[in-house]
Structure formats: structure tokens, C-alpha cells
Length: 182
Image 1 (cartoon, rainbow, N blue to C red):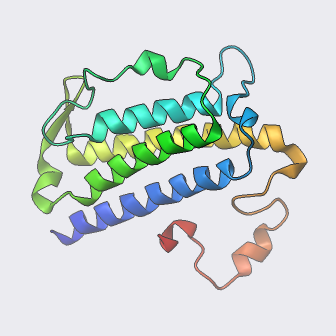
Image 2 (image 1 turned 90 degrees about the vertical axis):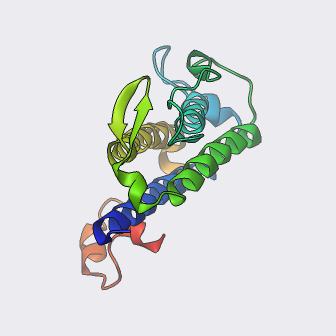
């Protein structure tokens, strides 16, 4: 694999594993009921966001190089419906989606990066398809964290630099980028 191709895949994986970890750490702080909280009728609960992310990952990354990323079996509209899933069921969906995604991403070879894949019949380079997910998944994980922070308020356990601790963090000699631990 070319050096730049290898670096791209490694950094994409590290970043996405970091964002998954933020979700994991958020879910540890939540009860079953918390997952179903909606700020209003137009907003998505964390449960709905998990359903959508899992559905997207399974559809996009199953047979990634050989089939359109929008599978016929995907029920995207149903991902945005309220289901009575427990916390454990939602976490199973979350893990299933990420496992499919990481397995596919980790299996890519140098020659694959130049290939064209399709999502809803739109041609995309493999690199563009990965970048698309680098924007999409953290977008929804940020929504999940926002809702969780709103619910937990003072009980929220910070996932990054706590308010008022930037100088201390910046003066620390350890690696600053938490994604590099992956």
C-alpha cells in the first residue's frame, strides 16, 4: 500500500474508533429511559440515532466494494421510528453496525482506494466514501452527546477537556490527540 494510502486508512480508522469511544462513554452514563428522550417532536432520541447509524453502517459497509451502499433490505424510514428497544438491545445494534464498518474498512487494500463504489447509484471513490462517513458518523455522535449532556446536566462526566481546564491540558506533556490512542 502506498504510504499515503496506508496513512489515510490508519488515520480514518483511528478517528472513527475515537468517535465510537465517545459514544460508548456516553452510553455508560445513561439509563434505558435516557435513550428514548426527545427534546421535541422534530428531534431524534439517542435510540433513533443509534438505529439510524447501525442501519447506515450495515447498508453501506456490507459488500462495500461490490454492491450499492443503499441495500434493498434496508428500512431507512423505520430507523427513525420509535421502538421499545432496551439499552442492551440498542448497544447490540450499535456494536453490530460498528463491527461491520470496521471489518470492511480494515480489509481494504491499496488497489481498493482508487475504486469507484456506489451509494444510491451515485459513484464515489472509496476515499470519498470513507470521508463521507468521517463526516456523517461524528455528526450524529455529536447529537447523541448533546442530548446526553442535556439530560445529565451536573451529573455529566466530561469526555474531553472540562470547562476551565484548557491551560492545564495544554501544558500537559502527554500526547494531546486522544484519537492517537487507538
